[in-house]
Image (cartoon, rainbow, N blue to C red):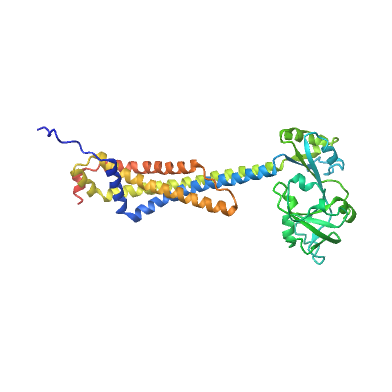
Length: 401
């Protein structure tokens, strides 16, 4: 006997499939919420890590653009065969003769300690160094004075000092108002300025700076530089770096060490990139756990709803309809988790970036990729349960009713 010609094959419209998937999740809200939560945590971790990494990198690049990458630092080499460990007294003048060099400034170590008062035991130095500095040091370092003035505006031969940001904090000097003094060497020095932090030379932050003339007069400074800062034309920085050792010490160029402070910041960024990769790996693990949770929920759902599956098959639903329903539930769970994870990751990134004073940058790949990753997890996690549900025999399923 043939089927009537007016009968059409059973079909499941996309809207009906979505509605059926939604009903399946609403009837098991707590279980669905916990399953989606795993996806939310995994996606949020990945979006947050990528966003914070991009925001911190933007801050570092802005800092490098502001400070410049064209500064070189010259010091006497250390180790076996390094000689006296001192730079020639004529080195700054010789370096200034190199054509692409824009500015040169030197500092020298002074055998003295600085204290807040003359009552403090001599061994409690607070880790603060005393340096003799030229009046052009701040220009070469592109630093700024937070309060007061620098040595170029103070009497060169008077006992005055300028404190680095960290040194001022350790000495408890927060302002130059009231003419504060510190015990430096064996006499009182007036504090005329406090510097802002200098990223490219953190040693300056932990130092008390004294003019070269005053250091020689009051502290016995021998005017031998221990470090030279060189600003050069960015186009010729590698060329200048190559000729600096022979210029500074023609007799022993191997005893001269030339470094680029900005390389340290870039190395820090490389370390941050490695840390970012680690956090991304942890986010991927969380995402995998969320996918396993969804697969587990869907498999249990198939076992619990065998009667429902059998009834639907008896009413005309095909295996394809059953598979689409369960796969749709898995996709809906992962989509909810993806949207929630992207939103949570963006919020966390914004809050932390604002706290650190960074620009908030969330890469589009983090948003789009996070959502697509959640969908992919949903497909993979729901495929097996959907196929298992489709293979349930209607007669065997109806026996469980």
